[in-house]
Length: 112
Image (cartoon, rainbow, N blue to C red; front, side, top):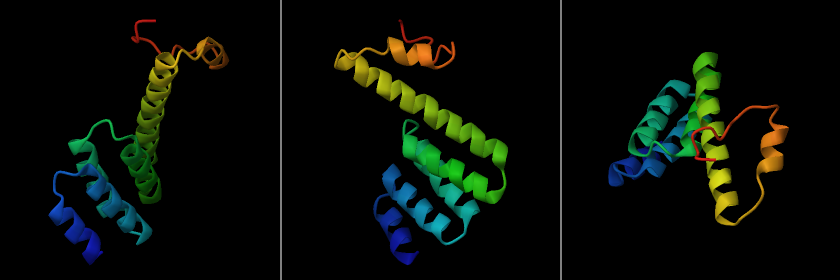
């Protein structure tokens, strides 16, 4: 943990530093401290999908399942948006995918 703490100290504006530190803390069975690191990563980069996934995992391990579900839902929605943007950029049909989501309009507000 000393190495990860030093890494964060050397890179205080890098969300990846906090994410890596949080993963190490999670591996050491310290989900509460891991959550604080993931919080900081998300504060620095609110679009950092992996930090939401990791924080959701930490919340699940800490027993705060409602927060775990919320983070995993955010990460899923963000990932779907990234995938949609990719499909649009490369002109890949997404209509079949939308039909398979059981009528959910996961792309609401996307201008489509």
